[in-house]
Image 1 (cartoon, helix red, strand yellow):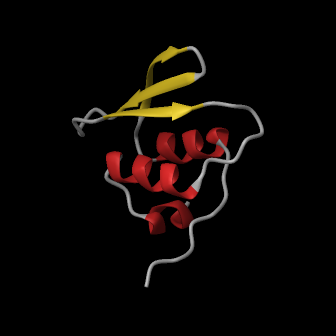
Image 2: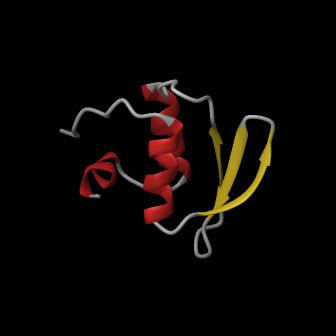
Amino acid sequence: MSPKLPRITAKQLIKILKKHGFIFDSSEGSHQHYTHPEKPSKITIPVHPGKIIGPSLLMAILRQARLKPEDIFKL
């Protein structure tokens, strides 16, 4: 059974992605795009200060980043 997803903001999620090797690529309005030198995907994060990222969106972002929910807790 996988652990329950934490309720995190975009700022916290970006910090986690950076620790996993993702780097800032570009931004469009309130959305920031991140890439990884070894992974082919481009991750888009909606950055709305103080708002929590919903669990379904968080799971979708983790899937795109090829990360598991457990990877959030390892850091």
